[in-house]
Image (cartoon, rainbow, N blue to C red; front, side):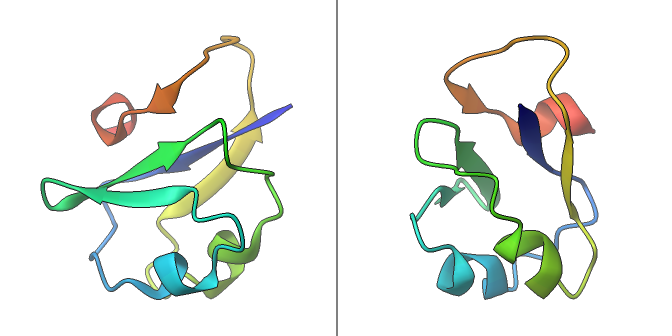
Length: 73
């Protein structure tokens, strides 16, 4: 399964928040957090992001829960 990550390139424009059909992206202290339990890895946010700051990658770590944007910096 692919993991969704938000990189430091994020400008917090909010385009992904409006696009995500499952509301998996949540603003948290000026950053975005991915709710892995809601994310279906549809890629809508990846396509809409003007800063190209959202990535889908193979989840080789097998993490669960929420993805902290600090992990990608």
